[in-house]
Length: 135
Image 1 (tube, rainbow, N blue to C red):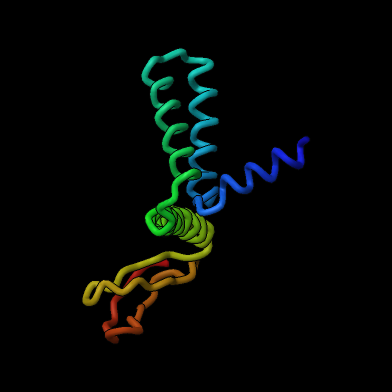
Image 2: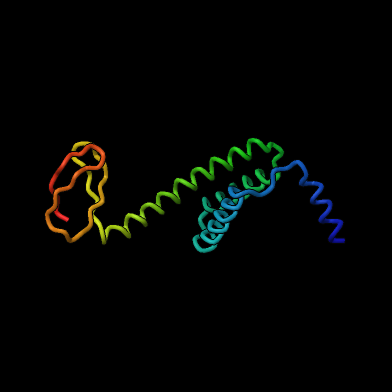
């Protein structure tokens, strides 16, 4: 009985887009919204839950595969930019205790100088301009 139901569903899903990373993200957003609506009981959150649920199922059962693929690629590009921003922020925060980051006054090139060396003359590796900074 369950095998027959599974085969019918598999036959129904043939030619449809299915789940991807954007759909998984939408399901997590839906889970958060449902939890928020459970505690807050705000009508707009409930309507937003229904809208996200409808859009998620629309994407899953869609037959316009190139359009859904394009949406997923745009989502992945945005996700990559956001995660890259936080990764760079974490890296620069970990370096802040060991290094000073200065900008060259002439060409605005960022230069990393170790802390605790006193007053030093810094030479820009890009333009060769020399300037004095405290490390």
